[in-house]
Amino acid sequence: MLYGGMNPKGDFLEDTWLWNGRTWTAASGTGPRARSRASMAFDPARGNVVMFGGFNGGLLDDTWIWDGKSWRVLSSSPSPPPVGAGFAYSAAAGKLITFGGTRFQGAMGGSQETWGWDGSNWSDVSFGSSPPARKNAAMAADPEGRLILFFGGLNDRGLLGDTWRLTSAWSQDTQTPAPSPRIDTSLVPEPSSNSFLLFGGADDRGKLMGDIWAWGPF
Image (cartoon, rainbow, N blue to C red; front, top):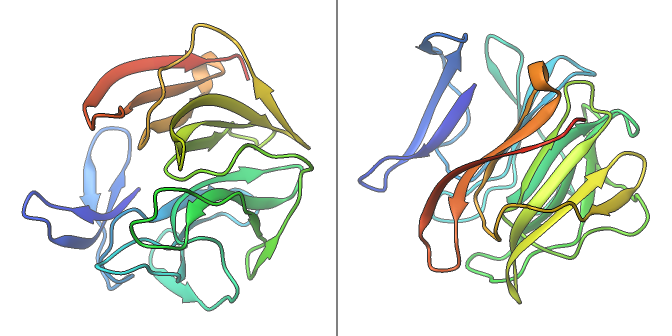
C-alpha cells in the first residue's frame, strides 16, 4: 500500500492506494492528515499496517493503523522521532522497531533512538550497541522478521554508506562491493531470492540515482 506524499506542485497528499500485484486501486474513506515522509510498515504479529509521523509544513507525531479496510488513529505518547526514521518488524522483540529520524525541522543530524511499537504503545527498546545517529536511512525486514537490514542515511558528518543487521543485537556488515552513500533509498525483501533489494536514493549533490543492489541471502 501507499499513502500520501507530494505532487509536482508541492501539495501534500492524503490518498491511500492498494497494489494487488497487477493494478493500483484507490481506497475509499477518510484517513490521516495529508503528509509526506511518514514511516510505514506491516506488523505481522497483529496483522495490520502502522504509519506514524511525517511532515506537512510542520512535524506530525500521530500513529495510525490500517486494518485492510480503513484507517484508525491511536493516541500514544511519548513517541519516536516523527520524520526520517527507519521502520521494520523484529520477531526477536515481537514489535515494530524504529531507529533514527529527527525531531527538529530542517536539522542536519539525526537521532540514535530505538523505539518499539507493541500494537498499542511506543516504548524505548535496547539492542545493545547501535548504528551511529542518522535520519532518512533505508530499513526493511525479511518476511518473518528474523533479520532487519539497515543502510545509509544522513547525519551531521554527511551521507552514510554503512550497512547494519539487527537480529537480537545490532552488528555491522562489511561486505563489498556495496552501494555508495545515499539517502531516501527504497529497501524491500524479495522472498523468491531470499534477498533484499535496494533501489535509488540521492547522493551528496542531490542527484537522484537509479541503481539496484541485492543483499542476501537472508
